[in-house]
Length: 449
Image 1: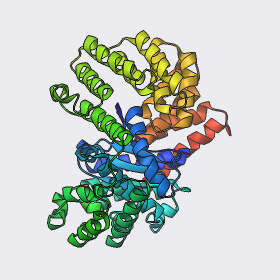
Image 2: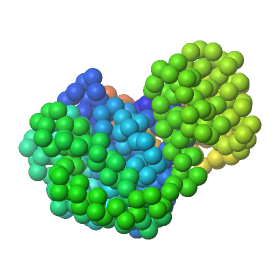
Image 3: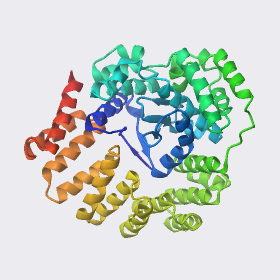
């Protein structure tokens, strides 16, 4: 599991726009800049839990992502039609898969019910960097309790964030509550998890904004709202028990996240509490790895793999443990097995490419990393490795271009501009790469206005 300062991408301008949220958050609160936790196992598990809900919401699950933000504060939000963001703190706070699925259902309802469309900047998201950047900068500001400052610093739009994004209205919250319950019921999931989530934030409305959890600030709470939700879910409580698959993927996502974020001794004492043997071995492997005990970490991973030999994410984790222990040849072999099982997973491909770079196999790494970026351009580490590969193979212009894009995704637009100008000088004028460099330069210029 890795952290990176990137947010979702499709076209380059969209990637640059999404990076502005991180620039804003970094300036507004340097010690708590938003980062994403990119992990193929956790993201796959979250999508297994989300897919039946998203389908009932009428959303294309193949286009959607549920991504984890590395922040212990409790929040979840949407900033475009394709991504639901959940803070790691909220994920760890969830006690059942129904609670987590209720959060996903509620955020999906905000998308399906058009609550983003009513905000002018969201209608421009597909066309302009500034529109999407403003929405996400405001979302970052909501975490710190100062959406106006975050958005204003990033885009020179002081005062607009509060009006345009900072919080959902009470009417929108009620609408999302009702729709979320309906999605859960139609998907055969117990919607009472939504009430359990609300209980976490009970009494928040009586606190000052500075003391509220970000979720309570961006999702207005009220006693009436809780009572309505209780009535809507009462008939289903206990009648739709979670299936084994939901229990498993919930245990896997939360178990891996907690193993990387909690003390290793704490994890070892609770590794098997999920009831799934392979998840217990996986958690123990992470704990031993964090204690630098490679032998015990690999032994636990081998036990997990023996139970699920074709699981690409266990092979990927084994590769990570070996890679971080500087066992590059063995790591490459583990990552190769993961790729054989999940050949189109961008995060798995990126890990494999990183191992090939560490081995000096730049020609082979090039194709793997290019495929990873083409499928998911959200990982700054992959961009870094691809830039190194271009440089090592004598393609200085492309190395500068990818470096410029990486800095732009991280919100470091001054550095991005320097490398984009270098790429413009080195790449043939009018070529695809040259055009991408102009996109970076345009984004940097727009951010200065």
